[in-house]
Length: 463
Image 1 (cartoon, rainbow, N blue to C red):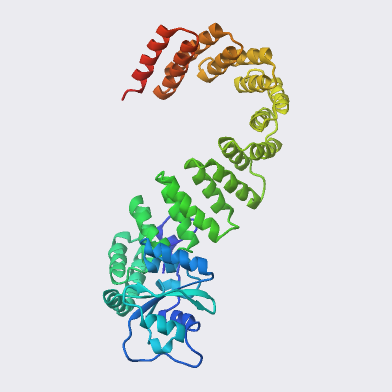
Image 2 (cartoon, rainbow, N blue to C red):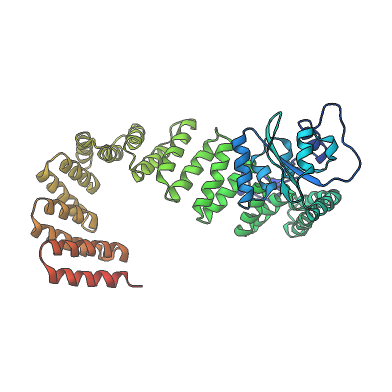
């Protein structure tokens, strides 16, 4: 029994978030997995008391060896089972209880009998792929058996706690859910319900910790992965959010929301190239045409310096947003994709439509310069300066143009004006422009001015 809801964040009360969830029992799980291990016609023996075992089954030998390597590196075996095993045994971390070795197939029986407690058997084949068994330690065996005996009480506490939460008594629900987890830490729904309660109470870190327990116990829980990703994103923990959304997108490849959230997390984490691919996938799954989605795709493509993707996104965006905004977007993308002549045409349309647009003039100047039209480029850069005198980027571009023409005196004047324009900007930007001016002074043979400007840079960058 859970407190989930696909739209729980917007629900009016915690009671609106209640839902039930059923898991297969231990007996059912054991019966299913034993079909691959038991010799035909044999049944499980009552005695003697053998050690408890866990099992992991995967499709290929390479997957099995990779899992063994992860275990050797420190990943708990039960977590590996939950994340990688292909059978129903993963629900309980692969634990099958005290199986009589005599009831196992000969290959598995021989391996288990030679394996000490706390160790893994060598890899062996099954009908479904490849398997490895862990013979658990005596201490873990006792803990698991105690947990099994306490299972009915734990589930009763879970049910009562969930009912209280449904009724709005969050404070009363918490101790019951916590006690249920003391009796059985693998009660996934108790972790989930606590996470939802913590989130409702504004304790986001506790909610994240509880929901992470859910994803570790049940990595294929799409809803838990999506919620974990959203909460991590809210805390600006973008790489971790990306991991949760990656898992969610893998679980439901047709979920537009999962791919969109993944793209946004990638972009926030500075992984622009990965964001381009995720946005593209989200676009293929959208029902209509969302200009904002194409704009986001374009933004990520520009950050990733992916010219073809940028042009594709810009053309889609322009079709939905014709006019000045669309011309600018396509011009910028074409310029990135080394299609300067086509970019000139798009920027000319933008200037014609909005003569007072500094961005249009700056773009047209850059495109004109790329096709070798230096004088028209200078005119458009100067116009951008006139229209937006507080933007240091225009002065920096103009200074680079003048320097490229060998007109260092004009370049110095332009960049000095850029330093003045940056005065109201952040210290970081001021330092960048000042450092650029210092380097220009040096190239112009103005050593004294360069030294003074570098002192200014140091002052701006000092804590």
